[in-house]
Length: 178
Image (cartoon, rainbow, N blue to C red; front, top):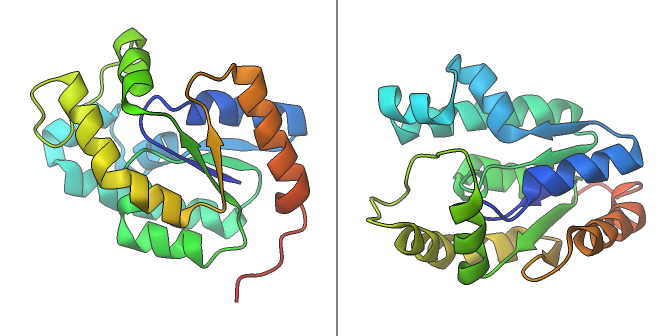
């Protein structure tokens, strides 16, 4: 299962819990891409080499993960917008789930997070950044996803139960893509 969504939608948190509950492997594409880049943080890659270098590392990391394609993968918020990654997801046997939250919920979650990530779109503030990311990525995520799980206003356990149900129903024996 591949989890997609904007920053702070809960991809890593829910993905870890889902994988633990299912006793399958969990991987975070950001961590895999950092391994590919050789950098210590996403911020470092952006500062030293820019977004194109990060997207290249994501493409490499996704290709390596896809070679094994087992368990649960949490994708970075921009990864599904990379054409090669999106095409690979569309053509794979892997179930893609969009963790959806609205702009207000994402702004509130991001404001509480400890880690600092590079701002996107040259935005001047958090709300502008989240609103622009949502406007640019929501339709891509919706079109790509096999399922959408609403996480806005939901308890984590409810979102996790929805993911578990999808995984058991569709991800265990998914037929090959045409």
